[in-house]
Length: 213
Image (cartoon, rainbow, N blue to C red):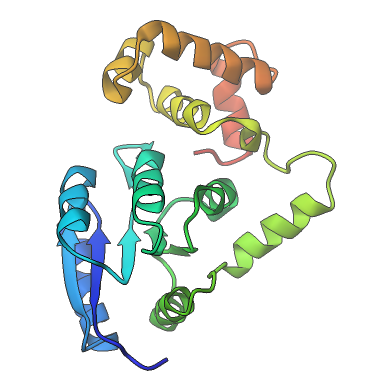
């Protein structure tokens, strides 16, 4: 596609990844101004100060998936497309990202030409979906139940399940997500109920089977 200039925003807490991606994008889109930021707080300031043609973001840090960052951009800046560029498993998180409103999900292990393809599609107001995610979406169409039981969880339940699996206590999660311990406990109970498990050990076993998170 013809390069139109403008600005891209990179959101990634790894400075090495940001620097490398910035160099690549500068070569692929030479007339585009590339901005970068390490986290959601700085991202908010950038989005309020500039108009971006595209936000490329990794929403995973310290075993946490920051769905709120996606929701913030999609809801407050609906004209700015979001491309997720992450090591998150597409088979587990892909549908949730799409439902949250992103225009594409790309693995950090994808080749350079796939990155360029994904960006060009998103800038053309189309969606980019990898072959792996297409297979997941097609499989779900032909099954009565989701192929992955973790797909039944709400976004908050999903976050809490991931934190529990990474060794965080109810108190830890309460502090991390800035919600009451009783709220965390309620969500934890719902997670166990939806997954038909009784304890954390069974949650770990189920997570191993489905490669979660």
